Length: 113
Length: 116
Image (cartoon, rainbow over all chains, first blue to last red; front, side, top):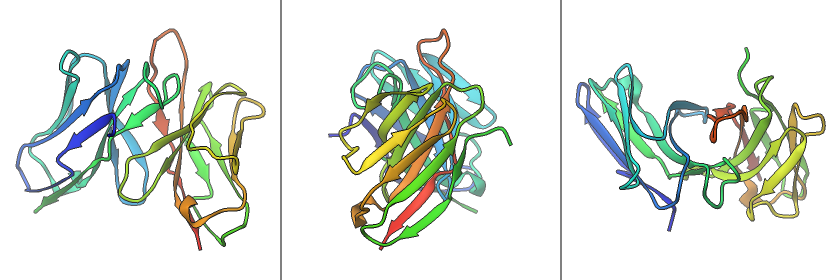
């Protein structure tokens, strides 16, 4: 069982819809990353958070440390948001080094015009 | 460009050949990580360096894999006697280990390896 679980695995939505991607983790962490990966493989860090909520443009990330759960929200979704979104837990756990990351499998998001 | 760079971006090789990948981190970053990502999966941790010291290796890193960071700047990842199962995207990331408990990692574009 992966230590970081994401849902859904695949999500197709219409342009303008509010998107939510969920992440649950079973390990102790120092911080949680939300990453975006486009076809071709490059990974961009969207957020790193250890508590509360962060907002950047149309993206919002929240984390509940007690429940070991985080969500990524996209408001007013657009076709250019189509990508794989990956949740990754960092620090204070096995398998990822001192602050290497343990990744979820990713959520493949398609926003249709 | 001051981001993390990787070279080559794509590598096709025949089974049994050796390959070497290079990663250049962000210049002031003292930590460097290697990850592997197979199709449809999230990345998996392979190893990391603090300066020139390799501090941890995953059990995924078989004896055929070796990584170095000789001067604490760029790093190389070598795979000897490649197997078809080594086909994957190899990702490098770097971070600045400072006073914070945890530091954000910045990723390179990856090297996609195909073993025929």
